[in-house]
Amino acid sequence: HKETWNTGVILLLTLMATAFVGYVLPWGQMSFWGATVITNLFSAIPYIGQTLVEWAWGGFSVDNPTLTRFFALHFLLPFIIAGLVLIHLTFLHESGSNNPLGISSNSDKIPFHPYFTLKDVLGFTLMLLPLTTMALFSPNLLGDPENFTP
Image (cartoon, rainbow, N blue to C red; front, side, top):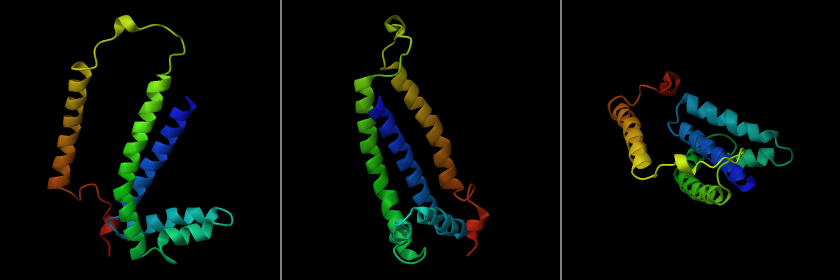
């Protein structure tokens, strides 16, 4: 169970990192200052903090090298996440889900396919359609107005 938990936490942190570097990519005011504040948090690490921050920035401040690095990370991290998901599922398959009462539920089970497959496909479609519609027809709807300030 420990490996499953650890890979789940690593997955969470990697997903948050992907979201953060993606947040910086519009390169507006909110993106710039978000990158500055969050990356400066690493400067609190004793001895290596400031070096780590300057390495992440690619210089002495948030600038074009930072954007390039964050774009590369935003592209590469989903592949790492996919690998971590496979590792996580492998550990989950080995240890099984939590069953603290030890009650056998074999009589209540239904086959995964086609019931859950169709249910998942329907749910995915119902979520993807509004998201795609919003992204294609009003991409700035949920954007922060401060990000449009030069």
